[in-house]
Length: 130
Image (cartoon, rainbow, N blue to C red; front, side, top):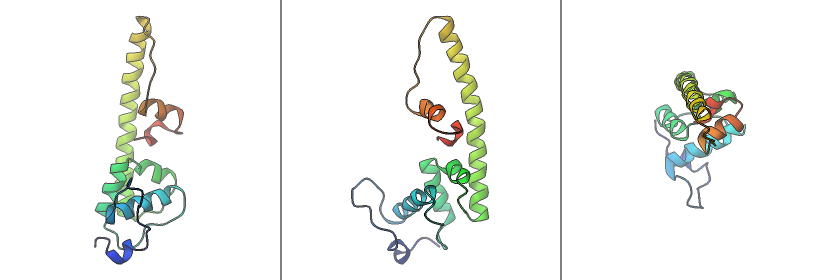
């Protein structure tokens, strides 16, 4: 079953205009709370909707790494996504290393910005940043 209005009422509304309203907003607030250890997934939420929001925000690996309690089917799907992300990261790193090697050979200085820079400087494992 989808999150109903009664369940959504337990979550404060986003008032700054920066977030989603309704079911998506409630799931987003749960994700934020789960990543800081404050909450468990409420019973009765549509796991497909929850997974869609987890994928939208790219936080499946972070939720698993944090040990967030997820229903078994949702946990398995998030784990599969996380493994795919880790495999992607291995390929991405190899491509970046080859590219940087070619840049160095030609005397071209380079600086990584945004995602890649964050993945390797902020996160304990680069695949955790999606």
